[in-house]
Image (cartoon, rainbow, N blue to C red; front, side, top):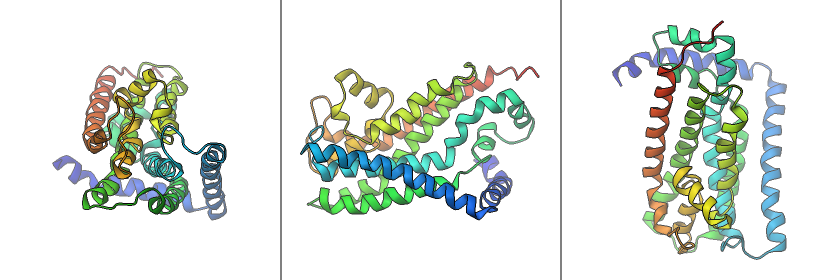
Length: 270
């Protein structure tokens, strides 16, 4: 921790230079924001199309399902903004950029995290917050202080879970060659799964995306608590209170996996 605090000025300089470079061309930056917003609206339209044909999805009515979508999108967009660029690690390995990072007196993972910060992805965060504001009065009738606390911590812990998945996927790149598409199945796939009620999945997939890749803890299980629903067999609503615990476990596993991979990294060979 002392080393991290000592190096904070260096991280601020790195992030500042990245942010300045992204906003230097304002028209391009605005188009990037519109592109991300259009993609988010397209995904939201899927919810509308589904509920145009059914009254409930996975046991959830329109309001709770919209709440699941909003919480998942806010959590994902925060994690994608901060650490989403870790999926470019294979190119860093091929070009020797990672080797140069290892020579610097800063942790490699911290350098990778601060090597980019995609501000354009904040458009998706803004859209998720708007959908969340619309969904809350539709989905929740009975507010309690405990529900307010859960609502506040859910996007943060959800983002932490997605960030841990990005770190874990990056750690796998030390053994895979151009394996980004395979690891994206767990990162981007978890984002898609978390946008819908986990109860729609087959029981095997439901267990996988709850206790192996904890996508259900990002939005579905907290929504069950917020909307006073019991949940399907095997997924009781009280599990929604354990989202911070799952985020901590996911980060512990991701960091152990990252350090194991980094210790066995022998260089790009160039």
